[in-house]
Image 1 (cartoon, rainbow, N blue to C red):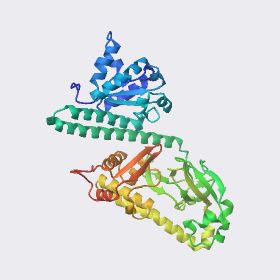
Image 2: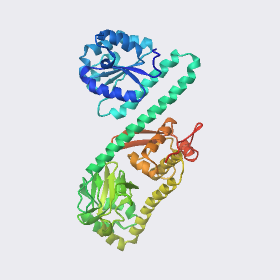
Image 3: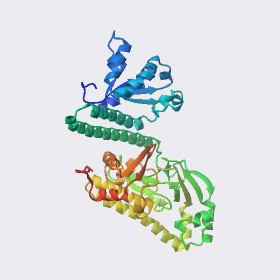
Length: 455
C-alpha cells in the first residue's frame, strides 16, 4: 500500500460526461480527509492516459469508486477499468470495489458479476443521504487493508485513525443534517402564507361526519349520541397533506379539530424576537386543536403544520359550545384532553432543568415515547415512536440546539440504543433498548467518556 499519505485514497472511475457530479464527490471526499485520484488532476501533460491510470492510479489506491451511468456503459475507458482481469487484480490486492449506479435501469444492464455486488443507486436526489455511507465504506476499506499490512506495533496508530474516522463521520452527518434542516426551514418560510383570518390551506374536506364518527371520540365520552345531531350539518372529515399549515380560524369563523391520525407541530412567534419562533408542542390522535381559540387570539402568530398526512374532524367552535352548555360532560372531556397537553408541557419544563445534553436528549426520547405510546413501553423489546419527527421540533422539545441533538442521536445509535431513518420531511425513530435508554437518561456515560454537555 502507498505510504505517502496516512489517509485513504480512492480512484474515481467515471465517464467524461459525468465529470461535474464526480467533481462534487471529490470535493466532499477531500473534506472528509480522503484523498482521491482523478484523471484530470493526476495525469500530467504528455503522459500516457493508460499508463497514468493503470500504473499511477489504480495500484496506489485503497478503493475504486465506479460511477455507472448510461454514458459510463458506453465508455471504453470505464469498460477497461472494470474488465474481469482488473476486478480480479483488485481483489488480490485487497482493494475494495465500490460500484454505484445512477438509476435502476443502469443496474439491469451490468454484467452478472457486477450485479452480484449489489450496486446501490446514487444521484443528485439522494446525494446527501448516500455520501456518509460512501465515506464509511472508503475508510473501512482503508483501515481493513492497513490492519492486514501494518505490523502489530502500529495498532495504537490504527486506533487513533479509527477514532478520527468516527469524528469525521459525525461531523459529516451533522453538516448534512444542518443543511437539510435549513433547506426545509427556508421552504417552510417561503411557502407559509401570512396569518390572517382569511388564510387559505390545502385542507381537503372529503365527507360530512356521521353520529358514529363523533360518538367514538374521547371528546364525546359519556355523551348521548342524539345530542350530537346539532353538530352534523357543519361537521366534516378532512385531510391535510404533510408540511401544510392548518388555520383554526377561517373567514372569521373559529373551528375545533379532533385529530384522527398523524401529528402536527405547533410553533408561535417568540415574545421578544419577532424573527424567531418558539415550539409549543405536538398534537396527535384524539387530541384537540383550536380549543383555546377566541376572537382576541385570531391574529396571534400561532403556526400549526402537519408533520404527517393528517386526518381530522372539523367542527364549528360556536356549535360545539352550544352542545357543551347543555352537556357538561363535554367540558369535562375537554379538560381531560387538555391535561395531556399539560403533561407534555411539564415534561418540557423538566427537560430544561437537566444540565447535561446527553441525559436531556435521552430523557426527551423517553418522554416522547411515553406520550405517544402510552404509559411505560418497557415490555416491548423494540418499538418505533409513532409519527414523523423533525429535528427542529425534537431539538426545541429537548431544549438544545439541532447540532447538539444530532450528535447525541449519533452517540445513541452507535451504542445500539436507537436507530433512525431519515427521509423527506423528518425521520422515523426506533427505540432498540429501552432499559439502556433509561440508564443513559440518568447517568449519560458512554464507556469512560461522558456525553457532551453543550446546551
